[in-house]
Amino acid sequence: MSKTATYYPYPLSFSIVLTIYLLDNDIVNSIKFSELLNSTMVVFSVLFGFLLTVSTLLYTIDTKIMRDLRKTEGYKSLVHYLKVAIYGSLLIAIISLCVPLFKSTMNLNLESEFIFYGKYLFLYLIFLSLILSIRFIHVFIKYLF
Image (cartoon, rainbow, N blue to C red; front, side, top):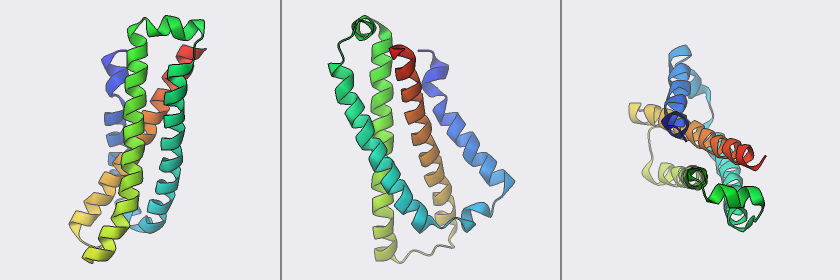
């Protein structure tokens, strides 16, 4: 895979969050982050489970296409993309689980600048994980069919 295919999720995620920041700075404050955390925990836990299932299937598929793919560098890229997508989904699920615990035990001020930029970081990680997963699925389908 080209370097563009390898690294495009990172600047794309940053561009999306930067666009949100520049277009409407108050949109982040209007998001109910407790609901977003609950939703992301569920969605990314399911995505994590799906990607783990795909990883076990990836090693057991024994078609001619997969045998030929295993002989090329494309298979290494595919496995790498899968690992990165799994780690991204796991990271978001863990953050979504831990943030409410820290918020309640540390009595964080939700109006502070640190929390304000932390929300943007969280949005960046959400978009990044989604794009990493979409990249893997796109490449996987491309090689299979």
